[in-house]
Picture 1 (cartoon, rainbow, N blue to C red):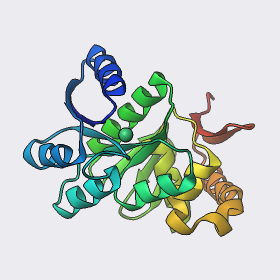
Picture 2: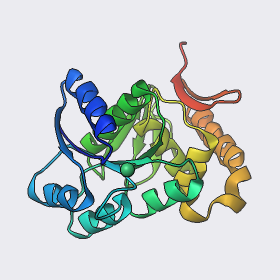
Picture 3: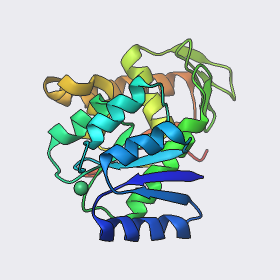
Length: 227
Ligand code: CA
């Protein structure tokens, strides 16, 4: 698994690449934006980790240019600040995920694994979780044990797809809102609960042994129910 790490703070770059190598990733480090973009265009990586503030060219700009050149490699953006603007700009520019500094190393590793999994799933296929099957073309949700099926609305589909692609991870309300409504989500922020309820009802309707569990004060997790 090849990772490109573009990070200008050498101590951070060293610590991160050491950590990633211990996890058996093959790591290349670039310390400025220009050489980072150059590496992205030259070599095919499995994941790209981009710092936002870089000499030469920002992480946002690199992402935009790489996407414009048809590079589809998953990009994890490291934002120095926790402001939402940074996160939104990161996703808006074509990044797949963001992580605010300072972060826990296990959080970074979890995000990387999620990105790899997400990349492994080709578009226009079926996603599975427990005894539930989600068809990404028709938006049909089917229980594989009883064959019961229901059509999801677009937002319900995006919620469930996001949960399945990030299974075993707790998703915050903010992450869900950002994923569902994107840039202009603030007015819709409170509707996350509403759409979660709709989605739960569909899961109940098909009789799948799956639940979207609310973890008070933390977020939500997709779980299989032991029956
Ligand atoms: Ca930096």
